[in-house]
Image 1: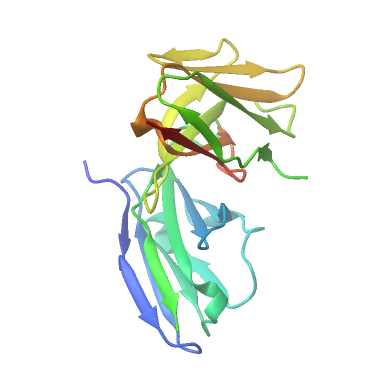
Image 2: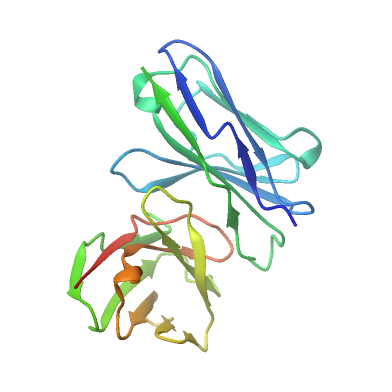
Length: 115
Length: 106
């Protein structure tokens, strides 16, 4: 079975440009999470989808970030316009059971560099 | 208040030593927790789950202290390959603390 996959694995963009990150969760997983790890800092929660609904988006840094999960399958995270401080590794994770708190499986991350 | 909090370390211990660190949590209703391990430049991976009865897997033991609202991770006979950042989270909401950096020296 395929794990959580993220595209692209690396992205280098200029300040002011737009970038869209994609996450394909494990099939059948209702929960989908986005995280960000800035160099030298802790991994920070961004938001949590349950199917196509945003359950918790308290970690989204500002309105330049937009996450979607149309149809409750894959998710995208768009950064527009990108700023230098947005550089980091963006991780996506998915899990199966909402109430029971099942293990979250992580993708390998997208390394975003804004220059 | 943060969901979970950890001592960021780093903990630097010799190979073969026993090391333990804690993770405090704020939601008293949380029933179970996870310990994840994250290697440098890699994604977090589940190390073990922690329930009320605790959990042991080889050299690793995790326990839950409800009265004081913390979970612990004990690593016995540490190996060089145990060097990593250890992250805790509630099982119902996968939000990590700062993580604890562990470095095992030869």
